View 1 (tube, rainbow, N blue to C red):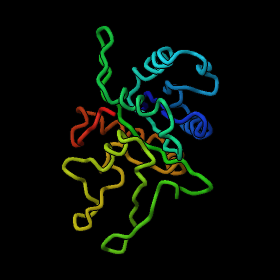
View 2 (view 1 turned 90 degrees about the horizontal axis):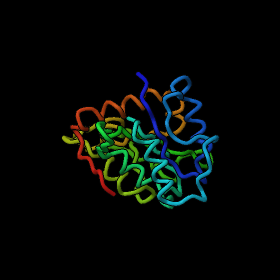
View 3 (view 1 turned 30 degrees about the horizontal axis):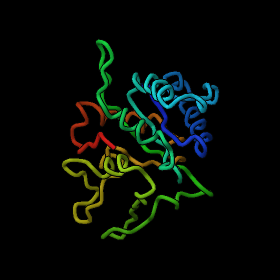
Length: 203
């Protein structure tokens, strides 16, 4: 099933990955509601006009794709966009409910070391951790937040990679290969008001 999507990203460093994601969506790209390379330049317009334009784009979507890039926390918009997408927003006689979210880790210099760190669990199997100071609090607080916790291993207390977090973190190569898989997973988590997760909706 296709879902209406929005991509939240830092324009100065993630335009290329945004375009790659839209291309990877294939026929499903017709349901994409965010900016494209052909969108009007809003640089010189007022903050309020930019917000209103973004609200119009986001309101009718059900899944938000967040590009995790090295300087994303310098963006003026990403954390605000995420907060907006997590809220129930009413317009006239319609209400837009909490979006599903998925974080796509941008590859830098051929790897993901700027954000992703590898480790080993109690069984000698590989695990990952993340440099959470590189992302907004509203992202870090919605990762590893399943309730009750969905452990990959009860003994090691390592979370399930995909379903242990409301905002799962997926490497760009993995996401590009099968965007529908991760978009559907994000959407499924948003059903029933995101029950099963301790959701943080405010920055």
